[in-house]
Image (tube, rainbow, N blue to C red; front, side, top):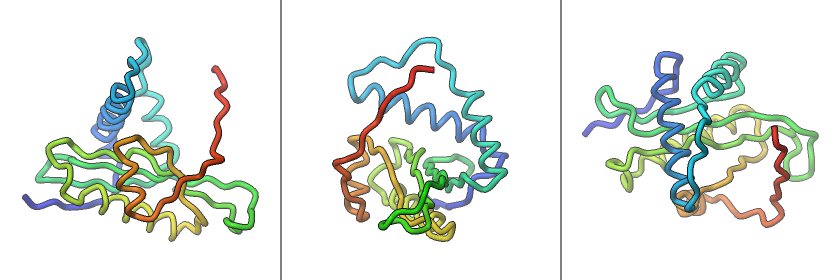
Length: 158
């Protein structure tokens, strides 16, 4: 097995989107929820990734075995008013962390995480945020992420 790492390009985008949907489905099911019927994310994801890859506010690293993508990562860059612990106001939003089940526990996710965290550092981000799945908490904690007990969300029905 010879795992290679590369940045996502438009050529891999459709496969990346399929893996993102697989990740979201796995996370939904693991929490006992049923994936909502009639929700097709493919077009919305393609639109999002194309726009943000083009303007430089989304980057992804892939793990590849031969010609097969076996792991993904993603970092979106956002900006908000600067504050004491993030004087640049630039934040990285980590997403799309997924490793094919046959390749888990081999250090692939950690390598992908490291690469996108370094992208956030290069972009000038003062922090990286993630809403971690139960599966991912150990990886992120081991890397140095800490819990933010004040994180809250208000859902807007659209």
